[in-house]
Image 1 (cartoon, rainbow, N blue to C red):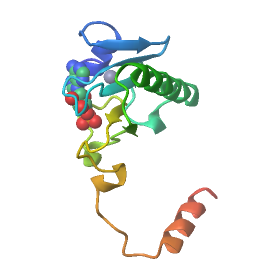
Image 2 (tube, rainbow, N blue to C red):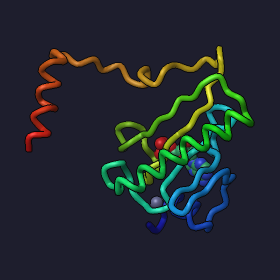
Image 3 (tube, rainbow, N blue to C red):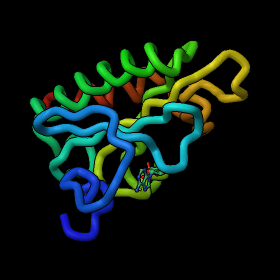
Length: 139
Ligand code: AMP
Ligand code: ZN
């Protein structure tokens, strides 16, 4: 997609600190890292969210995510990882090209678990919410 920074990284028009690549996926370091080794894994093909991409491509994105974790374990040696995707503007997605964040975590790094990014507890019983969601699969 024209004017997409991550499409430009994928096709080599824009430089990046590339760390791993497969036929359809590329991994590179985040330009504004939240931790040493903060990496992004993207499909080369443009798509904003998981639901816009083919299953096999998503599988490749997560296979690469696993490989990058192994590389980071051998090089940066973190204590843990936070792995996550911002999907849609309301979640904080600024670049509308799917990217999996791999953030190396360290004991006492001052970070929080991924569940702490939002505090919007439902007013409804979770059993009601679950039945609504289950009904969606009947359609
Ligand atoms: P998001 O808010 O989920 O869209 O996050 C976009 C991420 O991409 C941020 O963490 C940015 O630091 C990162 N980013 C933006 N431009 C570049 C770039 N040219 N190379 C590497 N990472 C980038
Ligand atoms: Zn793109």
